[in-house]
Length: 127
Image (cartoon, rainbow, N blue to C red):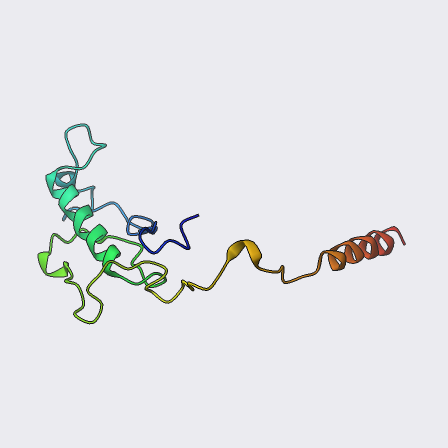
């Protein structure tokens, strides 16, 4: 519903989609990333998530990283590109078209073709 807005955008940031549990040197979960309740992140865990979120916001739509590797490496924090010094949205990533009107687009298959195909399928199936 916000596709046509030039002053607002909603963008999915998938940095947590394929993230694996961070492991310590003994291949057990690294509890330094989690709070005492073992559910919420610790300060270290939130710092990692914040860096991953920031990096995701700078990556173009369609090229966003879908994991976080929990390296605690501050050098992986990206800076805005001087050529594109803004947060990436569908529109400025090349997916938006300001002339597109979603309500007035024609379907790619005419409605009558669906009806004819369904009737033909029933006839062939009954034979």
